Length: 400
Image 1 (tube, one colour):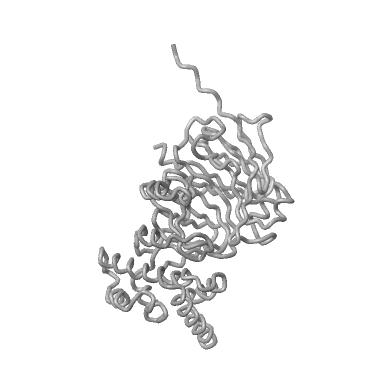
Image 2 (image 1 turned 180 degrees about the vertical axis):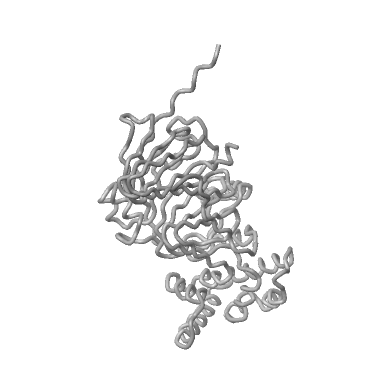
């Protein structure tokens, strides 16, 4: 006797999103989060809006409340960030370290999962990520004497002796020691170094054009006075994403979002080890001990066309991938079914979302709408106005 056919998937469901308020966020009309929230609840958007995410936080993850035919044990979630002020210098532990930190300090590290991330720029987006190449670090030591006294003359001399082609444990060890000395320097030493640096840059700005990194230092110091993270920024790659470009962030890599707006997708975890540019708890020794100290500019994803009007961003993590759909007005586009559940987020435009499982065949879709779409559900989008939307789901590689 043949097995009965599987039941049809449940219909897509419209989600109501939460808005979270952070001191670093863009406010009011300047914020895409506020604009999206206004489409769902005008009273909510009048508040100080910074970050939006689906209320059903594990909608693409573990034990979702809607029956699904496939999913990942530790999948991800998606959110929109509107960033006006730098977020903390931070890193996310790998799975093994996350388990150890959770066991040691469960009140700080509240789960035992890792937290790979990906940010896709909606607007011009700025971030710090990973350590700069040795030549750039040598340029910092030559031009920013205020740093040498904090990392130690011996470490500075060793870093200056390395060549661009040098690699291996000696470079990593020296960089780790120098960075730890900087991050663990006394508050008085940091304050004095910053005061000298800011004063010098303000004077020099009148007679020459400052570099991007120097302008960044001045900006960060206005945001976080006397914070060692302002100096730490000189050690990292300064990443500038144009709309449609993406940055993926692996375990144990230092990073900080600086400004702009993005779609962010990540594994389901709240594990963050912070060390600067924040009033929150800083675990500097843990961060300094866990970093990879790789020196390379990060890979910038452009998205790969998978069909007309759709580009796919597939980071090297099983938990998630994101499709970016740009559909012109008065067009119909079919979004192929996938074996995992998805969240659809409409950023601009309006039209209809069609699926066989929907009563009446379709739902209206407009700016600010968010839909949970079960696995194996083909979606047809018909647009009245040109539409920009994102589909976030489990990475296709998980199912291959």
